[in-house]
Amino acid sequence: MKFNQLFLAAFHEPKKLAAFRLLPIGRVIRYAFLFILLMTLISFTRFSLGDADLFEATPELTEYSQTIGVLIYPMAFVSQFVIATFYVFVRISIFAAIGIWIGKAMGRRVEYRFIWRTTAIAITAPLLVTIFLDFFQFHETFSILFSSLIHIGYLSIALKYYPKAVK
Image (cartoon, rainbow, N blue to C red; front, side, top):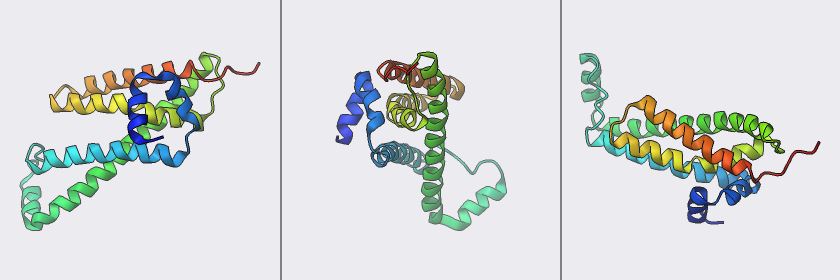
């Protein structure tokens, strides 16, 4: 399955979203890294254009940033990539754990590895909402809560299509 098919199905096909649990883990991780790259590029572009003034805190940091000059850009890109990777994978892992509880409450046969894959694909809409809200400078707590509710909603809808637990 191609990435654009995964992307479109992640929005409006909960049955396929549940079926994505059977995808190879490598494909799911590559899909997650596409969003990590997107987040990094947006963040880096905003940093490069001066939207995020990171060195206003102290005069020492301003002086240090002027000392290293253009080396700040590759360091900023790598730092933003690492932070985005950490954020996305921690978020997927936390919501997969929440998905285990939701799945058990729904009486579904759930395993963490399958929930993790479904959660990684279900993060599509919440990440796009987070990026969108970030452009309009919404309160960060509101943005995180709103995208978290969307993520749990997508995950809950997909869990309806998981097989029922054996009793």
